[in-house]
Length: 334
Image (cartoon, rainbow, N blue to C red; front, side, top):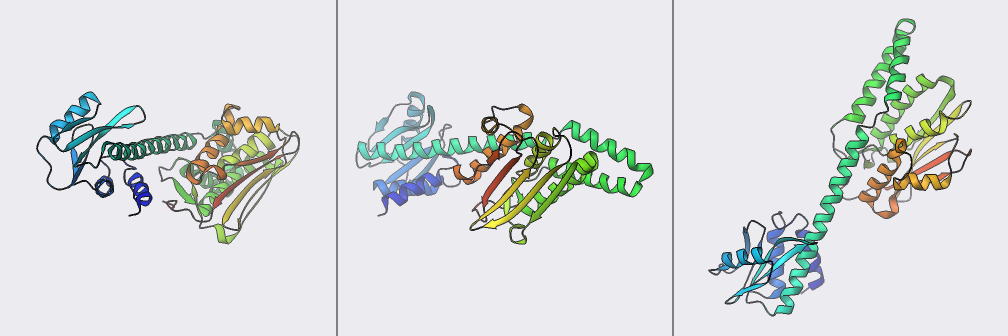
């Protein structure tokens, strides 16, 4: 019997809790591991999911006793122990004909670990969703005002140009505020970037030069929604706008081995590397919250090796690198 494999499967099955779709499978695996004739998992309401022979009489009362006392209980051949997720009671494990208290405690520890992991993952997922909602709402009023002012000034003198920019503005706001899923494609992100840069070029005129290059082989790569546009916005707001004279923003996307690498680079005023570290940790200026937001979401989706890399120095511009796998299970555009 593959005990370690079953233990891992139990953790996976209980990812969504005792009431989740994998709980029945987890109960079967636990019963098989323990060699018990019957096994049940009860949630905080006392609802019992059962595996094995017919449920003995009195099990319901046994579950209620454990829920009330948070202490192990036994009746005849049935043993029940509380299950905790962190410091909170999450349910009850009931075993009929348990092989021994040590094995029962070990099984309870597996279940508790699975429930705690599930709770932490759900909490992280809710936090990531909240950050994405915050990023969607983070359209700069200054940019909106300037863009609409430029469009209004062109209505009479260059109506075709004004209409084109208004369509760009509509695309930009629709993409930024759309109630879509967590993921999109590199193609859609770069389209949003080009729309945003067209509006910024209309606002800044000759002060802003742009260069956008993306390799065809990465256009279909799935990426978290709004991971590139905030980096381009920061490059303009904090790199190009404060400098005197014209500045260049370069955005590129290409495949490197098994990864898609997206780079946003500007030749603006740059910053102290210590400030860049503070921005990524969320301790820096509040008008650059997009950097820490994007960094945390990348690490949440892909792991700690896939956060942002920022290369910068005072008066030396800034280069921000996003690296994501060309394919990641579970990461699919909406």
